[in-house]
Image (cartoon, rainbow over all chains, first blue to last red; front, side, top):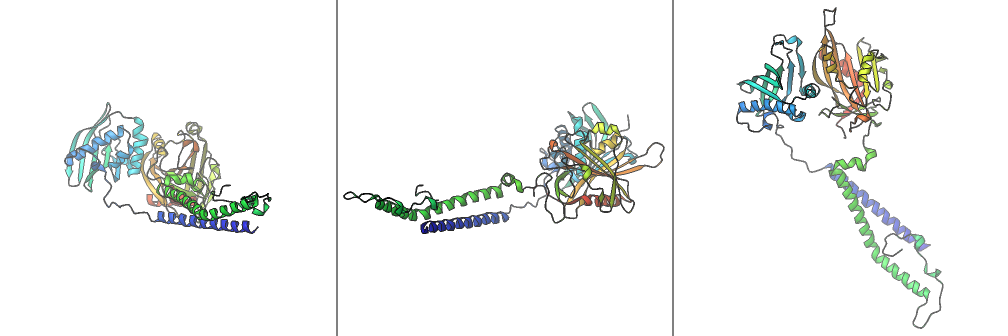
Length: 185
Length: 293
């Protein structure tokens, strides 16, 4: 069957050519993926802290806005937005109503621990409203301190909070919070 | 089989001589001649059309292949669909030079993903399709023994699917408690820091990363807890390192979650204690990488 043989051979050749083309095409596709057009790399620091807020006119309004946003994001349980307000090496301390004795303080150090505290300790309380009132703001260069009264619903901690704020890359960030500073009831 | 079809098999081609001869009328060719002529025309037609057919088939194949390639390359979410068997699936055995065999997702918590989520490769199984008691009792310099939980309140409260508690000791005389709690609901996973707080411990919480021998690092929450027990004058200290393990990146409760928790006393400074914990972790986890890589 020479005709069949010839035709079979030509089919084989055709298949081989096709397979070869497919391999080449696959390689070309694969190679092209290895060198994608590089996306423009931003050298700017990620925007966070007060730079994520609106209506910021000056340092004081930035700091007030930071505290207001903290309360709002706790109520909305928006952990990602909350954590953008904090500096990298931030910490939260529970003074346990003994402001002069730090040995019994409870500390959450770093953003992982602060995030954990929000989600496991603060959010389950499902606060409906949080206000940071009576703010006394002291700005010293790139550092600021705020003493405030926090009202979580009907629960009011008179001058119970002390915030430390830091300016990094032009944005103000929460650096530390010490709460339960008011004497034990 | 029409000649326009590009694929023609040898068995479908009839040779002209097989056609029976027929009486020829005036001006007519017999059937054999007709057949020969038709076959000749078909052959010519095939000769002319075949390159075009092969070319169009080739273009079509290349277009499909290129389209698939583009989808996979530029839309990585299609990759698992196309190559589902090639993906690092739930707690599958993975081939690795570092000897790590099982792949898991580790994270600081189970409620939602944190930016510490990582894929770890372990040399023991930490999923609920196996017994957590199969985790080796001998781990390098560490030798362990089972210490069953006798506090029934704990078991009732947590209601875990699996609960393993072991005490390991190394040649330096250092002790390490390993607790593994497995479940398919949130009930067994009370955050350890909250339990310590409820039990009257004072604690500080932070996070630490432990570099693994084969590359990458695993993150865990790091707790220093202390308490003065009744009748004692000095504080009892416990150092805890823990994280959660998921069999796959979907992290569904029904697939099971395992809390991996190490507890020791303080051995020197906190940094020195972390080294002891790190040595233990490195016996079980060999390398880590970003999930889905």
